[in-house]
Amino acid sequence: MLRHSPGSGLLRTVYNLLLSCVSVLPLLMTIPACTGPAENGTEQAQGQGREGDGPATDSTDFIIELTVDPEVEEKWQAAIGRTDIFIYGGSSTRQLEKHLRTSGTGRLTVRCRSGDRITAAIANSRAGFNMAALQKYDSMELLRYGAEDDDPARPLMSAVTETAGDSVRLVLKPLGCRIILAEITNELGGYVRLEEPRIGLFDRSPSAEVFRTDGFRPVEIPDDTAWVKLPYDVGVLPQTPGTELWCYPNDTPEETMGTPRTGIVLECVIGGRRERFRGRLPPLARGSTTGVGITVSRNAGGAPGCSYRFF
Image 1 (cartoon, rainbow, N blue to C red):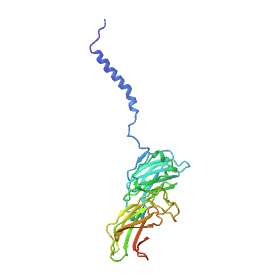
Image 2: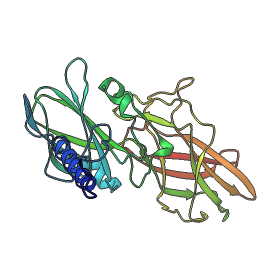
Image 3: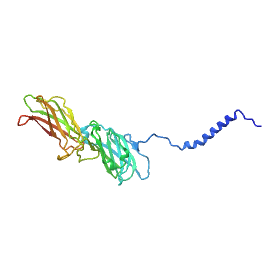
Image 4: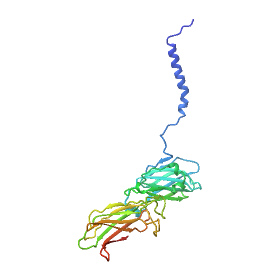
């Protein structure tokens, strides 16, 4: 007759546990380490250096140099923050191959397929990107950005270049335009002042295509006017306030029905009566800076009038 030892059950349990651990160990060794969720294939490019996916068949190092248009850099003195870089294949499908994210300007190197490619860059975007909708360059080419989402202090900039080589230079240029009131002169006489003066823009474009270089036309023009107050009343001496306005490009050469050029308006109080003087700005190219001079005087009938000059 066999007797059950009090400790035999415990020994058998320990033995079974050790056996199960040994059988599971090979499975654990085959599971790769997790690196966190990917952001739709986005790679983070930290400043200068190399960013890519290592050696691959028919692949090459691709050098991207980011810079700002020299004229824009001198006049705007705008900061460059986050920059998104999109690399598309140059074949008929123009499929997205890489999406990189970096900051500032400079040079970086990525590993990508050899051959023709389209490289596009968007700097200072305050909005995110729907990567599912940008898998082909045909969609990227039509991408629009809203003026209300832009920031004149850190404006949206972009550049795009098609190349077959192993390097590319992207010259970033703002999408928006600057309008600067350089001088305002009061020639009414009799010590009449221009009180509570302010200037504004009307018939301005609410959005624009990010990669378009010319042919900007207004669409869905808002009815409101974007006003900016001048720092002080205008007396007998000319003043140079340097007040700055901001809008998106409109390079319409000649006004036609439904496609007006962007307008500028001066509002002020003259002799207790509020007056408004409207004018039309010249064609505004993307990234342009337009100086404005305003002279308020009396017309032949003695009523106040206004003339604009642009430079």
